[in-house]
Every structure is written in structure tokens, then in C-alpha cells.
Amino acid sequence: MGCCESIEAAPNADHVDHTHFEIFRCIGKGGFGNVYAVQVRLPDTLVPSVTDDGAMQKKTDPEGKRDYVAMKKMAKVALMKSEWHMKVAWLERNVLRAVNSPFVPKLYWAFQDQASLYLVMEFLPGGDLGFYISRQNGLPESTVAFYMAELALGIEELHKRRIVHHDIKPANILLDKDGHSRITDFGIAVFLEQEQELKCKSTAGTPGFMSPEAVKGRSHGVETDFFSFGASLYYCFKGRCPFEDNNEMLAQRAIPQSMSHIPAAARDLILKLLKYDVSDRLVDWDAVKKDPFFSGINWSEIAQRTQPGPITIDKDAASNFPVDVYAMDVLCPDEVVKVDDKHAFDGYEYDYQKVAGASEGDTLVKRLSRAARKSVSVRRKSNKSASPGKGTSIVGRPGGSSIGPPSRRDSKEASNSKGAPPKQDTADNVKGAAGDKNGKLQVSSQQKQDSSNRV
Image 1 (cartoon, one colour):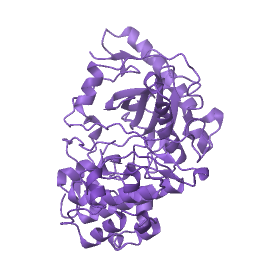
Image 2 (cartoon, rainbow, N blue to C red):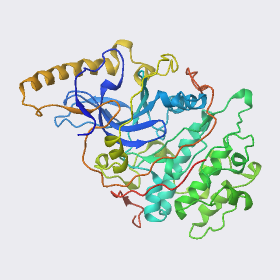
Image 3 (tube, rainbow, N blue to C red):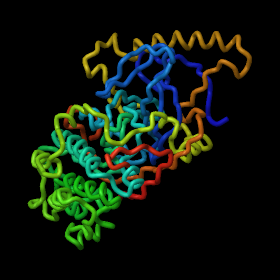
Image 4 (cartoon, helix red, strand yellow):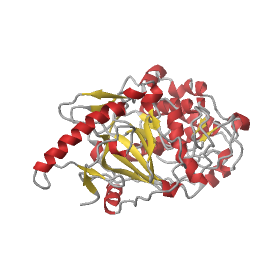
């Protein structure tokens, strides 16, 4: 039934690899691979827990409940078809490693085997902000201010690291279980370099959100993200982009046709951000924070995430992943192809605990691997004495997904982007190429497909 198999091998005791994770189901498919909701393989009484700041800790749970993490698996055979694809493979890993912000997903591990690259990161069950905007045909002003404030702090942290995102939009803003946001999708981000005067000429992005300088391929820096921030603010109120496409944006010199039903303060801020000429555009985050639109925002509380977000996330969202993505993974699992070049991605590995200062002999993986091996040994003995089909733990193969409850939610699938990734991670010298009237919303089990396309 699908692509499942019982546990045979114990988790690797020396380093993190795919044997440390049980696949729950596939939650996304892309050009280079899939994203899975997974759990760390541990005895039921010893499980990892994700804290409010994104860190992982041990906890004892008598019910054996486990927190999910997300695991992105990318096929090396697809990545190695071009130098650009290989650089893209490093990009998200490098950005997530370089940035430590509550508004950017936390990277836990990066590792590889002969067939694939893996990124294990924070799991965000709330879906993307664009879905809630589409569902309500625009969000209440207080809700918009909250999420745009979180977005501003997230982008500001990227810019401090000289990272230009290049694809800021609501579809790339995902929500965690508490309704707080994270900036995602760094596939076309750029690390700015001093020798290039902190400028780049990337022409990648999503039509309707791209700045004039990016569309024209002109040299630019972080100011292009301010334009996309303004376009996203417009989208939050209107439920659509300020421009149908890049040609319309250029023809109208970045002046939206309609600003109806947008509060005056928000309208003024949008116009400051959507300036055609960079020299006229608001490109200072301190000035953005002081804008009248954010007059009701306590920036210290936003930064510390002291209160839950205004959008309420269904606590059972983990079982409501896109049914078409899940079905495709079960019925047509990706072929696992090993590559001969064992050094193409040297240095890709990452363990967040070692970076955080844990000793080599006391990393989480070593401590948990010992417990997991003992658990697997007990399971094997139990399975030998059990009748066929009983007492066997079923998990997905490295290339597949475990069988889970059917999904009731429609899906969106991220479209591929093209851009020029950096040659290296200059931030840390990593090896490799660079509702209701109160604004309270309740998640629905029906998700709409994101219709935005990138170039």
C-alpha cells in the first residue's frame, strides 16, 4: 500500500541522517524534490519539543506526542544538471544558517547521502498569509498592521546580513502554530558583496511585486525589497497585486490604478514604498516603523512575540496537508538515483547544536540516537513474536511518504524562480556557493491555490 516499509536500521550514532526521522507525509513538491512533515525517531517518552524561540529541547510526554519538523529533500541528480542549480541548493541552507531571527524559519540540520540533500527546519502548519487574504478578500487593518510589522522586522534582519530576498509577497509568509509569521523561500535571494558595492542585477521575482529596477535588470540593493513590501501591504487590503504584470507597472510608473477601501494611513505608506525612482522611495526601516500606519504597534512586543497572532491556527492542521501532493508522492514516488561524485556538496552538513556551543560528544543526535537504538531493538524483538501485520512500525522510505489520513484541503504548489544566487555565504563564510471585526480569523480546512507565478 504505497511506499511504506518497516523500520530495519537503527538511527546512525555518528551523525544526523534520514534514519533519524519518521516521515508523516509529503506536504510539498518542487522541481528539485519534496518537503515532508517528519518526526525525530525516539522512544515515546523522549521526544524533541520546539520552544517559542524555535529551539529544540527534550521533554517527557506520557502520551508519546511529538512535534513535527519539516524536511526538504532535494535530488542530487537534478541539482547537478547545471551550475546554477547547484548554487541554488546552497542558497537556502546558507541563508537559514546566516540569519537568526524569530521571523525566519530555524534550520536544525543539513545533511546528505549519495542521492539527496536534506534540510531539516522548523515546521509551519498555518499555511501562507496569502490564503487568509484571499479567503477574506482582504484582512482587517489591525491584522494587516500586525503581520506587516512582523514582516518588517524579518526583512530588516535579512538586510542587516546584506541579504536581498527578491520575492517578498504574502504567499511566502508562512504562519506557525501560534499565528506568528516567518519569511520563507530564499531560492532567488542574493548575498550582497562589498566588492560589488552592495549591489546586484538580479531580474528574478514575482510580477506585480517586482520593483522597476529589478524588472529592468538595473543595479540595485536592498531597496528592491521595500518596493515588494509596499506591494504586499497593498495586497493585504485588496486581495490582489497593485499591478497585473510588470508591463503595467512600468507603464503606470508604479502608481496603482485603485486605492479604494484602503485606510488613509496605509494608502500613504504604500505610495511612499511604491516609488518608481529609488531616490524617492522610503528605504529606511526606522522610518517605516515610525510611519503613522504603525502608530498602534508596540515594536518591542512584536519583536518578543509576547501575544499570539491575530489569525488562529487549527491545532490539528498537521493532518490537513494538500491531498494532491500527498497522493502523487504515494502513487508516483520519486526515483532514488545515486550520484558518483561524492564531493560535489562537500561542507553542506550543519548541526545547529554544534554551532550553539554543544560539545562534540554531547550533541542531541548522539544522546537521542542511543535511546532510539534501544527502542528499535525492543521493537524488533516484539515484531518477531507478533503475528504478521501487528506491532510493526510503518514509516516511509527515504523517497516516499507514510500512509496517513486523507487531506481535505486543496493545495498550492510553489512555482520555480530564476535568479542569480550568491557565490558564497559571506555572512559566516560557509563553504559552498553562495475574520471577524476584531481581526480574529479561524483557519479553514479548504485552502485555495496560489495563482501567482514567478519569472
